[in-house]
Length: 541
Image (cartoon, rainbow, N blue to C red; front, side, top):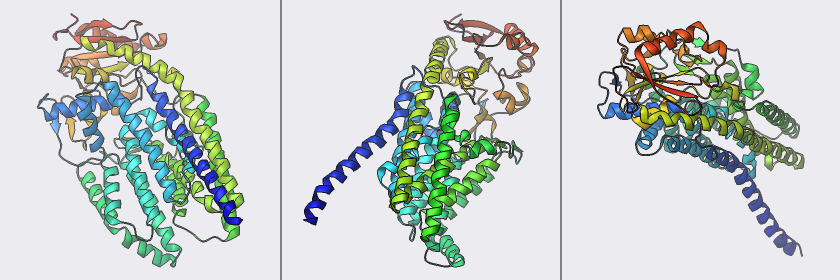
C-alpha cells in the first residue's frame, strides 16, 4: 500500500519540479524581454565600449598611427574588448551592445541555477539570486563586469560541488577566464571559493588544520591569479593609489540600494523589500541553525563571502586611481551570495523550508518588478539614441570625435546620467576615434591614446571633468594648441535647463564651437547636433 502511495506522489513531485522550473525561467526572461523592447538600448557606458572597440580595430589595422599606441599585456577586460571589437565591425552598434546585455542576463540566470544546484538546493531557489540579474551595474553599462560574473559563479559552483577536493585546473581556468573579462567578479569569486573550501575543511578538522588544507587545495588557482595580478600591476595597474569617496555610501550598500537603484523611483522601495527579505530570512535561518547545532558545511562559505564582500563594498571608495564604481560593483555580491546561502538551507526542517520558500517568492516579485519599472525610461532613452544616430551619415569617416552633453538624461534616471557617451555609436557607425573615451587615458589597456590626443589636460583639467554635464572643456585653447578634435557631438540641447545654456561655461564653449567648427546637422527634435571642424569636409556640407 505504501509503495502505491509513493508511486502516486512521484509524478506529482515531478510535475511540481517542472512547474517551478518554468516559473524560474519566466522570471529570468522578464529583463531579457524588457531590454529587447526599446528601439535602441541605452546603457550608460555602452557608447564607451563601442568607441573602445573601434579604437582597438583601428590600432590593429594601423589607423590613426599618430593618435594610438599599442600596449601589450593581459588587462582584466581583454576578452570583452576583443568580443566587441570583432562584432562591432560586422554588426550594427545597437545589436552589439544589446547582444552583450542579453548574454550577461541569460548567462547570469544559467549560472544562478548551477550555483543553487551545487549547493544542494532545487532550481526554483535561484529566484533568490535573480533580483540582481538586471543590476544597476548592467544599466551603467559595465559590460565586462556583468559578463565576468558568469564564469565567476561557475567557479563558485565548482568549488561547492567538490569542496573537499576542488579541481585545480577547472578552478584556475574559470577564474582566469573571469579575470580576463573583469577583475572584480574574479576577486569576489575567489573570496567565495576560499570560504567554501575552508568551511568544508572546518567541518572535519580544527581551524588551523582547515586553513592549511584550504591553502594546499587552492594553491594552483590562487597561484594563477597571483601571476595575473602581478602582471596587471607591472603594466600600470589602476594608474595611482588615490582613493576617492571612501566610506561615504556604506548605508546605500547595506540597504541594497547601490546594487539595484539606477533608473526608476520604485527601485528604492524594491531594494528595501529585498533587503528586508534577505536579512530577515538570514536571521531566522541562522537562529535555527544555532539552536539545532547543525555543523558547518561547504555552502556556509557563501554566507561568509556575503558578509566579507558586503562590508568591503560598504567601505570601498568610488574611485581608486582610474578604477571607478568599485563599491557599486562589489555591492552586487552581498545579495547574490546571501540569496544563494538562503537557498542552500532548503534541506533543513519544515520551518527552514517555509522561510526559504517565502523569501524566494518575495525575491521573485522584486526580480519581476525591477525590469518592469525600468521599461518606460528605457523606451524614452532609446528614442533619443535612435535620433542621435541619424546624425552618423554627416560625420566624416575616419575622423576624431567627442561628445559634449548639456543634458545627460538624469531627468529620467534616479542615480545615473545615461546619455553622456552617445558618441560611441557614431564612432561605430562611421569608424571614428572617440577622444573623450576614458579608456584611452589609462595605462593598462592594450591600446591607449598618445599624449597629444588625450583630453587631459588639453581639453579638460581632469578625468572626472569628462563626466560633468556639461563638461568644463577649454575647446578654443585646445584647438589653438593643435588638439586633433575634428567632430563634436552636442547632445541634450532640447532638454537642457536655461541656466545651463545661459551659463558662462557653456556660452564660452559654444563660442569656441562657432569659431572653429560648423554645425552640419541637427536631429528632428533638436536633441542632437553634429559639428565638424571648418577645415574638414562633411558629407552634409
